[in-house]
Length: 200
Image (cartoon, rainbow, N blue to C red; front, side):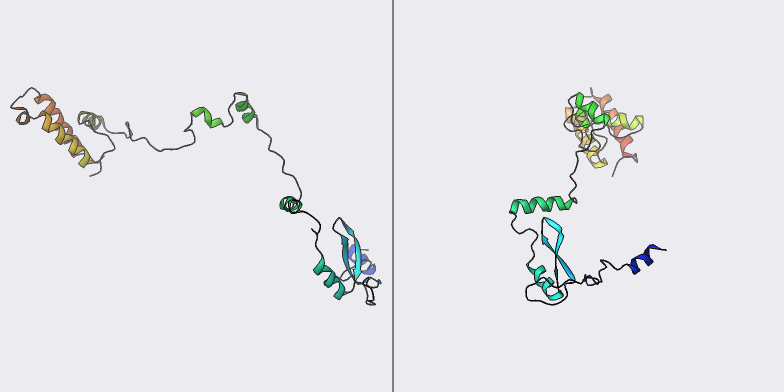
């Protein structure tokens, strides 16, 4: 004998799609009503398995006036809402991993604190120092021109011109004592000028 066949033969407590108990032989509990009490309604918000039995019209009327939170304060209502968000299961604090416990023994809440206050910041590549790989001749040329390797060619050219004005004999009353440095600056600009490693 199958379970479904057994249920069909024993209709005790079966309810139809409307919520009516098809097997109920009760009379509506509303005073002066003689209709069949096929619809159940809880008597009390604290005891939800004790019911009144009403006819269809009176259960609707009862449900319109039913307030589960009747008599509760605003704080109790909010507390119940918070519990309902997690199906009344309290959130347990997460257990610390072995690694977290090890850091805690050292007095460090966040393991990244060992790197300093900027540990979680990523400023990207530094543009203050040497940031690019360049051929040795171009690296030397940048140093001679007192330029930065992230500069574009026009910026490096300005640095080159500035040095030329300082070192050229015509700007120093014919003094040729700095000709070697001038030659180095000219050589350095030639390296950068023909390089493909710098923006134009």
